[in-house]
Image (spheres, helix red, strand yellow):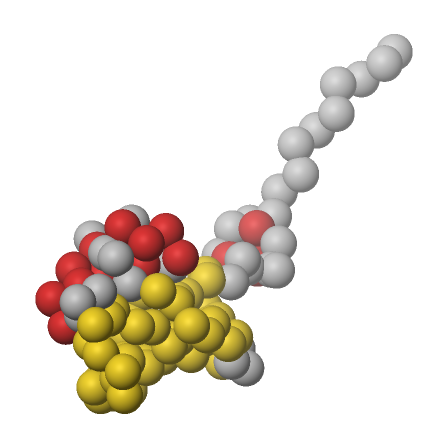
Amino acid sequence: MQGLATQSSLTIQRFTPQEPKQEALYAALPFKLRAEGTYHNLGLFFDRISKFPRIINVGEITIKPRQVQDASASIEAECVATTFVLQESKTPAAGRGGRGVVPKQPSTK
């Protein structure tokens, strides 16, 4: 995320991991993000996130003007970005509909 923000000329002020949310097949890993920059740079950042190979959802977006504005930072934005991790099945192959047949070992006679 830091790399995407830097490419978009945003400055990340805060990056706070949140409690993971366990689902049946995956875990959702949310984190709060606070960044400063321009409205245009924020749009570039969201565009880069949308093209990232890993799924990242962004929600709970709030945008407000900075108290002290300049050409490189006129807004503060906060959001929650969530990525997902597929949970590996802990069930052996026999539990997934397979027959669970163990191949015969060659005879040592």
